[in-house]
Amino acid sequence: MSDTKFTPRVFSGIQPSGGLTLGNYLGAIKRFVSMQDEDFETVYCMVDLHAITVWQDPKALAHNTRELAAGFIASGISPEKSILINQSQVPEHAQLGWIFNCVARMGWMGRMTQFKDKAGKNTENVSLGLFGYPALMAADILVYHATHVPVGEDQKQHLELTRDIAAKFNHDYGVDFFPITEPVIEGAATRVMSLRDGSKKMSKSDPSDASRINMTDDADAIAKKIRKAKTDPDALPSEVEGLEDRPEARNLVNIYAALNEQSVEDVLREVGGQQFGTFKPLLAELAVSKLAPISTEMARLMDDPAEIDRILARGAAQAREITAPILRKTYEIVGMVS
Ligand code: AQP
Image (cartoon, rainbow, N blue to C red; front, side, top):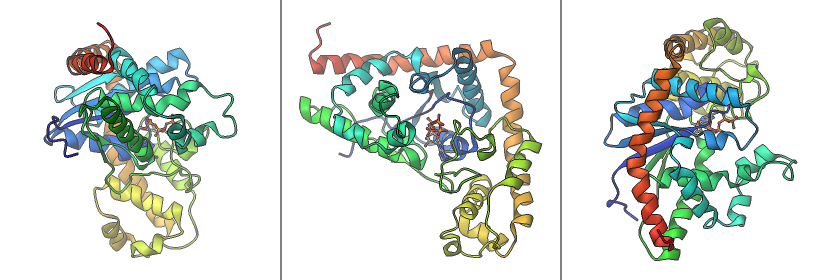
């Protein structure tokens, strides 16, 4: 479907399930910021309803939601240009989520690798919400009729499911109502890996703090984590092929390229032949120079949580101007009497 009938609109979200990581920043937020200045309406969300699919301490959840909002703004998302919300203040997300629970098939959900990764061997004991998460994510996106969703590589499968849900809804009800959303997975670091294990994604809920760079880490912590990052004993190659089968080396080079807005090829032309003892301090210096201004601004914004709450309340009111009519129409299509 060409979807030209839909307003070009971007939606994406991040869970306040911990502090923001460099993975969230490079995989998602940097693209959120640039899309604000393209021909899109942009809606960015702290997906608190998703966060509680695993246990969250209530005080920490509230803190993390505000801190995430501060992280968005400090990274360059402007509440004047974008609608900035936390999911639970816009009830249409959960309402459409229920409809999509009734559209999505158990078999589709059972194939979601993120569920398998997060549930592990414990499938009997995880929440029902964790299993249903991708149907709510589809609702987050489609309740805005969003046409584009910038995300990291790990969310690709959930976005395919979003397309399947939209297509099945349109087909079952004989309408052309929900757009078939385009994933936007771009940049040198669409999958930032753990600093301790190049086969695992950098994640805010990894028990090891050394595995990730938090956006609130100070310069010393960043430098220390990069110095201790797992690597192999070889020098860096001068060409991309030389990074094959070297996941840790590739990860650090990708991070450098994404932070410096260079291609991996260009970075390797400059640093090829260097040992990690030389490259790691360069990377640490670059990371500190890019991230320190963001963490300083986050701390400043967190000094006035009431202002953050005002921004989120304003965002929710703006969001509902879009979501309420779309939900109303969905209910009408489904046959709900109002
Ligand atoms: N390591 C990563 N590399 C690139 N992109 C990433 N994203 C997350 N980690 C990486 C992108 O950030 C956005 C928000 O993700 P999320 O917080 O909603 O959920 P997640 O992918 O499950 O992130 P975490 O850090 O792993 O959270 P927890 O530990 O709570 O599950 C998405 O666009 C994601 O692709």
